Length: 309
Image (cartoon, rainbow, N blue to C red):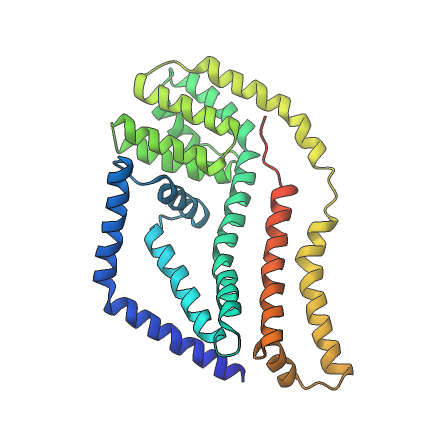
């Protein structure tokens, strides 16, 4: 039965992919007409705020630029595929709900990844700002050489070094204040803290106007050192909930399945059929996955807070 589900999923994916390729050009033209019409109404010459936020989130979480259009197309394929699969065993409303839940999982996973990157990057703030201030003085207040030395320095800033390297490339490839502003905003978005916003703003001022921002950077460093005490308090939080979510939930599910097969004389094929190919079992299985990922996201939000002031 699992083979039938797998074969059906492959067939539906190929059908959806073929339809998209067949009507790709009309769909693309219609989509861009809609986007351009919205931009004309709002008088926004560049990307819309939502589109820009999605692009930045994908770039930060995946480590490479991904088109928001391509991401939306992938989500549409996932929704259509699971809708066609679930409509065979579920009513229309439940099929739409289940397909929507499954489609939301990639968005939730990207958000978890983005928050994890931001959290790790935020804890490098004190080291990064301290190094920036030191090199900024040594290079006679040249922000470009400062960023270059930070990238080359052998210090433990694994996450922010990648962001600084991208910022340096963007700054050296343009002289437009607007492009510089966008590049520094990308840095601030990737960490999303008060200190990163202030640092990005000062880099923008130093790069566009040549202003000496030493005092402003010193103020950021002082506030980060004061915030270190709060971080020590956060480290005392109990990690028991995290361990239970990551390890206990999958183990409990596997253990209940094992006990059902071992002690209730339920064949493994029958167990998998009841879980995946019946209306009640399939809905419960999807809800288990959704709430499991949701719990991880919630714990990431509550426990793994960013280092900030």
